[in-house]
Image (cartoon, rainbow, N blue to C red):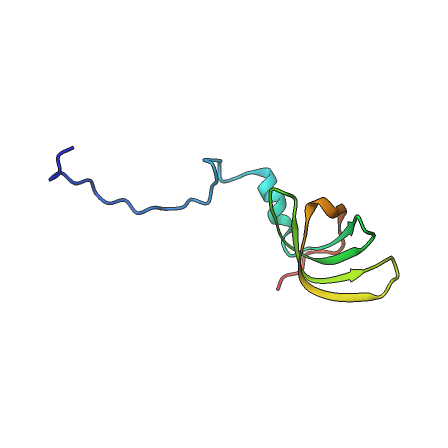
Length: 102
């Protein structure tokens, strides 16, 4: 290419895909449908966390907002707020209530 010859500038546009995947991905849509839904997570140490699903990652870590902690069913509630739960400590996850939007 000649130094005097210029190609038109093309702005970088992020189309929202990773690794050239198609935009529609059933697994991604499932995760998206969980956003702002109330979940209850049982942990390996017996605690139960209840909060609204915010995100997860490849290591199965989960972030919940407006989270409360219970030491046992019927136990005293402790309000935590925004929490990240390491995936290695999660025993089970269940959805509790219909969708809630902030």
